[in-house]
Length: 232
Image: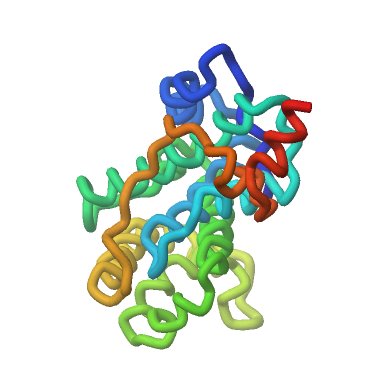
């Protein structure tokens, strides 16, 4: 699952702030909603997980290892889009707590909830893989296994072999109600057990420094990667 880089504009970060989440709810078609569900799953795991992850890691996972930005402004706007969604996940968790519901479920059209939930869960697993060793503690714990089951139940492959299509559909439909509480439980688990500061919002307005990791996720410095290519 790969998103296209966020379009540039005269003021790309401001445009991302004002339109990204609104467009996701009102103007996106089915393919865009599928991409956003996967991306939201990945950023949810990144936001609530045992260790901090970097925006350039999200960019690499979402847009691919070498996204084709038109210019530096588009790169900044694309990174801002991910930061905004990351921040919304944390804000909604703080406000809604055990009543948390993922953004994709609020804006899914009739009949697409299960497929979007499957994509969201796949994105969550990809987000866990950013710090796979650090997630082991939760995976091995009884509480963690129970909480993760609320997410993994959206993936058809976790059911016992021989389960029929109707039973799979029924289980996935029931699992839609478990996703939000499972996210909250996992978030609370890592608040109590993680050796890191509490999750914090990411500033989408901050300019990417020349010596910082390039937002494309290459691992090189910005000045030696996309910035150098875009300025030349």
